[in-house]
Length: 426
Image 1 (cartoon, one colour):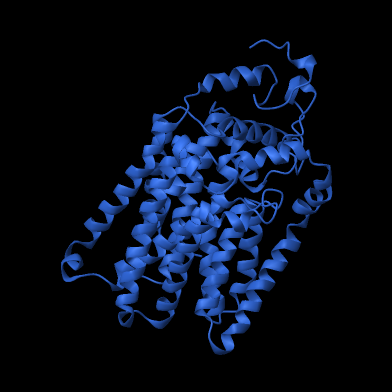
Image 2: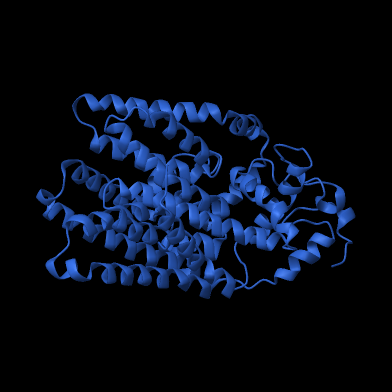
């Protein structure tokens, strides 16, 4: 993959603008969790522990099993940057911010590659900008501090790119697809499951005649990726029977681990904002999808089929993450399987971005042919404004609090600590 220098410059500028809100508000969501993991993972990695699964210095030196099976790839990426940033006197907070920024840079580039296959490179720049400013992605960064899922959304455009090419008969895309699936699996399993659902529907809609064999190739790439990441999931599966059943049942009650209910929307401010931005994103995707259907004769056959796939997936996404899918989710233990319904929102986001790209390329009115850049930049700005609304719901935290915890050798305030360490004063 070769990127012109102008694309890199655009990616750097867009990513910097993307993370500015993180500089305007105190950290929230899972930020302490990521501070802890980045800190202990990086230290232990550079001390020769190639796959850290135990925070050795946590709990006043007694250790902590908190890190056992969390998705490791984002922490490897942070670990490689950790020594260089430390040389400049930067702490773990800055390393975490750098990781968020880097994920935005890479997400811009992968989204540009995905869309460039369908629309002109210049229009793909706007599509990539829309991707990194989509409300759901901004929520993950600003409100949830969901570093692993954010990085997974960085790889998923490549899943859709190589699926399209594989179904089109480019067999050289097969190993690349397997590699990206493997990277996604060790970044965030739940987000990967829904992205692979998107790949499957995309392949079914695009395949025709002899190309149906490409669907089997897609399945084969997934099997190879699962085998390649066995070092990560086999121990997790082996130890599943020993999980605390009571804690697992409690995790079902965490709103972000299940489908969105009316009660969640009424009682949780963050869910109310999620519902609003999700519905707005879906309405945008639906309107663009209807326009694509009405003017389908103006679209190339392959694009028409793919647009239909993403319209179907946008509908599926809003159903799967809402109470409408309750009967489905209640049939199996989705948390134990690592499939969290809330993450299905990403399908709406992917569909909106693809259908927006189709609109920009083929469904532009004579007036928009003169003003389309301004129109779409304004739309992206509106989506960014919606996403920044989540800052209003964040619980303020003092960054200095983490340093106090770190000095006490208690890596995160959420760990269950033995009584011997409870006497540590901050």
